[in-house]
Structures are given as C-alpha cells and as structure tokens.
Length: 258
Image: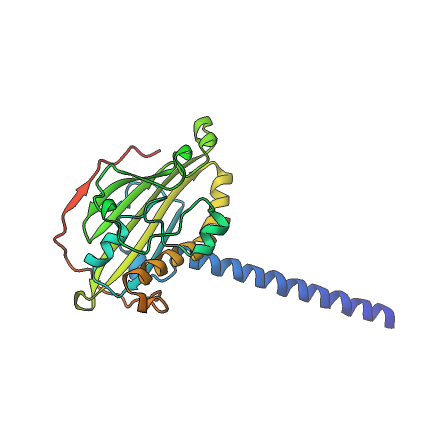
C-alpha cells in the first residue's frame, strides 16, 4: 500500500506540474497575441477608423500599435515617407535585421532629401528587386497619414503558381498633441490570407513577432525624431478626440478585393 500511495502521489505531482507548464505556455502565447495586436494603443485608437480600412475585405488579422513621439507631425513626416528596403529602412532594431533580414542595410539616421517626394502609385520596396516584394502607396496626406498596400509579401514562386494569397495594408496616422509639440502616431495593419495554413501561420508567427517588430519600429522612429525620448515613448495614451486637419490628400483608386 505504501508503494502504491507513493506512486499515486508522484503521478499526481507530475500531472500538476504538467498543468502548470501548459498553463504558463498558454498564458505566454495569449500575452504575445495581445501585444502583437495592440502594443501601445488604447481602446479608442483600436476602435477608430483608419485610412484604408475598406481596402482589405473581411480581414482575418487587425493589429493596431501606437506611440507618442516628442516632435510635431511636420518633423515626423520626413522620416515616415522615406521608409522601405534600401531607402530609409523601417527603423527596427539592428539585431532584428541582422538576424532575420541580413540583406537589409541599417536604417537611416538622417532625413534623406531625395526620398521625400512620395506620391500615390509609387512602389516602396520591401525586399531585393528579384523578390518583387513591396508596397504600393495608396494615400498620402502630408503630416497626416500614409497608406500602403501589398499583395506581394509572399515568396515569388508561390505567387506565380497561385499557391497562396495575401492582401495587406499598412496605415499610419499622425495626430498633433500637447499643443502641437508632439505627435500621436497610430500604425494599423490589416491582412487577409489564403489558404488556411498561411492564415494559421500568420496567427501563430506573424502576430507574436509583431510585438517586437512594430514596437521596435516605433521606438526607432521616436529615437530619430527626438533622441532623448526613446526610453519612454511606447505607452498607452488617454483617449482623445482627433482634431480636424487641413492636410493635402492624394488618393489612388482602390483595387478590386479578392
């Protein structure tokens, strides 16, 4: 009986440990999913309509990130319009680029004058030319918002053979705050993917990774517009109404959704 009781207690202890480990893993995954979809943004920002919301029909993933930048929108805008592969970069941490995207150059630490004239219809590369990967500029409103769209962020062979599909938008909105001395930058991406295994992979891998990538991008951008602010810029701002703007707006016709 003694041996049976000890064996039973040992089995119960193992089950309890297994439950604790599995619960911890589930909690970590849930936290990464939440951060990957919401880092830095508040509830009002996640509910508010963003430029280009209608381009991706029935998105399977919507992620909204935000940061407060200690510079007015007019000073943030030049950094934003020069993004792209072998342009200004994406301002992500250098270790991320070196680990995941070794062909990427370091992101720019200065405003590049020859990359400031971004227009609707322009192509913003996000990979080497042979990948044909990048974004098309769909809307430009100077110092107000920038809308990018892609169906090319998949291996070229997949796209040519019709193995998988992706429809993706990146929307950046700049709102002046603190009497115009700072900017609330909201970044929202929306995606629809097919087939099911690509959608599953996006939920399991892309969304958690975005907790690092998007936060890193916003921190990198904040450091560049104000080097003294980079340690404390990613925070949830109080809910606020968006003021009206008089920015010039350019818009491209929306493509037919799939």
